Structures are given as C-alpha cells and as structure tokens.
Length: 79
Image 1 (cartoon, rainbow, N blue to C red):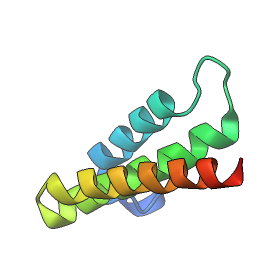
Image 2 (cartoon, one colour; image 1 turned 180 degrees about the vertical axis):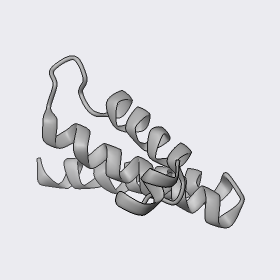
Image 3 (cartoon, one colour; image 1 turned 180 degrees about the horizontal axis):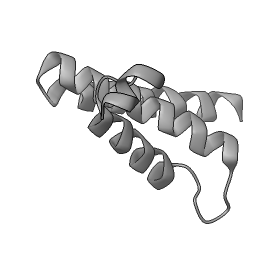
Image 4 (cartoon, rainbow, N blue to C red; image 1 turned 120 degrees about the vertical axis):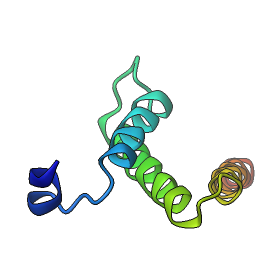
C-alpha cells in the first residue's frame, strides 16, 4: 500500500478500485469501447473521492444523477 501512495499518488486505493469497477460496468464492456471505459473509470474515481471527502452517499448520487440527466438532455437536443 505504501508503494501505491508514493508512486501513483493514490491516497485511497479502495476508491481507485471502485472507480475501475464503475468504469468497466458503465463503459460498454461487451463492445470494449476503450475511451468510454477510461472516462467512466475516471468519473467513478471522482465520484468515489467525493463520497470519501463528504462522508456521505447523497452528494455522489446527486452528481451521478445530474451527469446522467445532462447527458440525456444533450442526446435529446442534438437529434
């Protein structure tokens, strides 16, 4: 664990793993869209970091819901 903190600058390894799981679950794993998986891993890490910092699940759930809503509205208005 010390190696992770010093070399990769990851303070919360559990949040990093949750971000990876989030990315592979939300990024089209069956079609293996690499860019989508990477961006979802980063988003999962950010949302996990927010959960750790706020010590609440309400704010990350709100952030996730807002990004889903914004993404849906962008899809609707661009068609």
